Image 1 (spheres, rainbow, N blue to C red):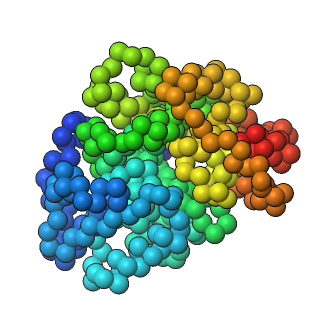
Image 2 (spheres, rainbow, N blue to C red):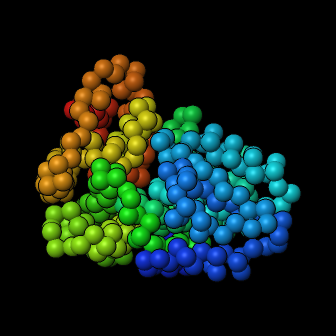
Amino acid sequence: MSYKNFPMVSRVVFGRGSFNQLEEILSPKRLNTKAPFIYFVDDVFKGNAWLTSRIPLSYDDKLIYVSAAEEPKTSQIDDLVEDIILNYKELPSGIIGIGGGTVLDIAKAVSIMLTNDGESKNYQGWDIVKNPAIFHVGIPTISGTGAEVSRTTILTGPERKLGINSDYTPFDQVILDPELTKDVPRDQWFYTGMDCFVHCVESLNGTFLNAFSKTYGEKAFTLCKEIFLEDNLNTEEAQDKLMMASWHGGMSIAYSQVGVAHALSYGLGYLLGVKHGIGNCIVFDHLDEYYPEGVALFKKMKEKHDISLPQGICKDLSDKEFDIMINVALSLEPLWENAIGKQWKKTITKEKLKALYQKM
């Protein structure tokens, strides 16, 4: 039997205030004065000198604000890559993403496409990328997505929502500074934290489970329960622990896979533009059949934090629109195999998925 030789983040620094070390981390990586560092920063930080004043811009470095209102599209990645190529004579020294999962995914995708020919839609899938990416750094400002540690970058293309899953996708450097999460809105904190929780549940209940992924998944699962169900943590402790839960949850699925909730939420995201975190919550709320214990805990967390999820988002969809969502979900075969097993096609039918979507 042959085992996958997965890559991991090469370097990581953790600690409150560790964002201040960004300049000393990047300086040795500068190729020359004409090879810039490009910073993609969530536009929620525009005008926020507390963060932006600490970004070490010099020479031809560029800061680009990007909106996280919508999840990244392949066309957006292609435009960003073209802009960099047209405006600089040399490839960048590095790409740095500062933000949530959307911004981190943009940074990973751009770093890949700067060294690989063609359009990013052609790299949606597993292990298609041939050339190593530009040096790239991830700095999460919200915890839960696992994007800081994953080997994928989720993109919505013209035909599907699917990641660029490759050995060249993971960041070369990650800075985990829990202080950067201090201003996250409460509902977004919950939705993104639940993304981490769902990662754990899907990994721990999947057919791909192994001792490696189980160890990380169990730790993240325990941290999520402590953060979202108990009352013994102060604000800083909760921020620290959720950042580590996100890391461990991401590591858990790196050597296994996600499952039913993610497959169905990709359909919602593709057709309706539902953001990933809240999309997982909307879907997971109806998956008692697949994850009874996890869903029961989720409902307790939702009640404890007084979270109301959108209802009836699929009630006015046409049969054609349902088919689009269903086909996107069914195309994610590794997710279904992990969730159900190799014979998943015998039980996961279009009718079954339509019935689930109609509950949402």
